[in-house]
Length: 121
View 1: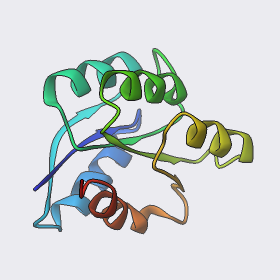
View 2 (view 1 turned 60 degrees about the vertical axis):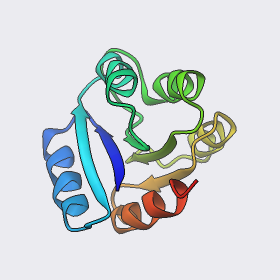
View 3 (view 1 turned 90 degrees about the horizontal axis):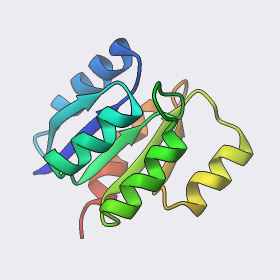
């Protein structure tokens, strides 16, 4: 069972992701966070296999959170899911260790496969 943390400042998006992930018998949402500091604390406490992470967050942005996650637990798969699908963000996130970078508008459905592919180790 893959354990996943959802990090997004939108409650609607978190609920939508949780519902999508609940459809898989292989995935369990272990927590949700709405801000950067909450996300970092949750990664330390909950020890998820994967984190779905937005770029725009209160407290600290998703890029800063990505850096912190990879410093704390480099084995965690990080899936960036954002409306800010800009080449410079995509490049920066990949360089910092993001496993995937998806656009919320049209790549939402790729999340389950990405979790299953990247947390197999």
